[in-house]
Amino acid sequence: MSDVAAVEQANARFYQAFETLDLTRMEAVWSHGEHVKCVHPGWPLLVGWEAVRSSWATIFENTAEMRFTLSDVRASASDDLAWVTCTENILSEVQGRLSVTSILATNLFERTADGWRLVHHHASHVFSAAPQSESTNN
Amino acid sequence: MSDVAAVEQANARFYQAFETLDLTRMEAVWSHGEHVKCVHPGWPLLVGWEAVRSSWATIFENTAEMRFTLSDVRASASDDLAWVTCTENILSEVQGRLSVTSILATNLFERTADGWRLVHHHASHVFSAAPQSESTNN
Image (cartoon, rainbow over the protein chains, first blue to last red):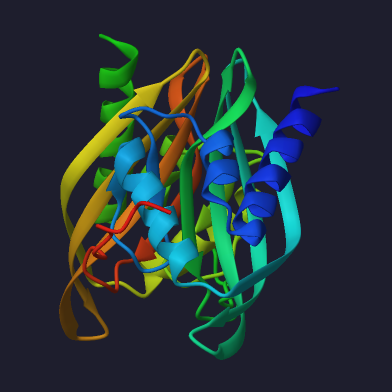
């Protein structure tokens, strides 16, 4: 399997863990160390595995259902670090309310003896349509 | 100079280019290729150098002044890819309105013959205070 395919597979595992709301599966997707970071949409930066793990525990406890359709998945891999951008099209039910929303995510993976592990997840809402930028001469 | 110090320097150059609103300086900070990507706060993902360059041209044309104070700059470098997270504390004047805002950024750099060059910038607003996540047992 190519590195890019392996990274795409690790990325898919991350979203499968998110959908199952199973903290043990989420723990298996991430590296565990002080270098690990995470930005949930609108949240401040979380630094270190304990803070990141706690955030997933909180999210899972407060989420009844979570379904993703991923689009625009683009992966690049170097020797020991890889990055993925994708759009998370989310159908979720939080405290009885159903919602669909699109989130942009940047996911970084590091190569470990056990395969690619997530070291950083940065997710944010898209608020605007693509800006018109014809006037690129200056 | 260590790799991390060189990456921090490349990151600082990116924000200096942003402050000067000089497209030539911004061009020098980035790699130029189809693999280059950028997420401005609230914008959709831009893919490829031409789209990214156009976005900076548009932003620079519509911005009278831009001043950053960076905080929480954390850099990690692997052999050929490096990543930085930081908070952009921005003082800006857009169409006569002065504003101060905090943005979270993830910046990815690739090692080139000419040093570290930006390949991805993901910036997003922070909307909420840190969530309380005491209840991490499940």
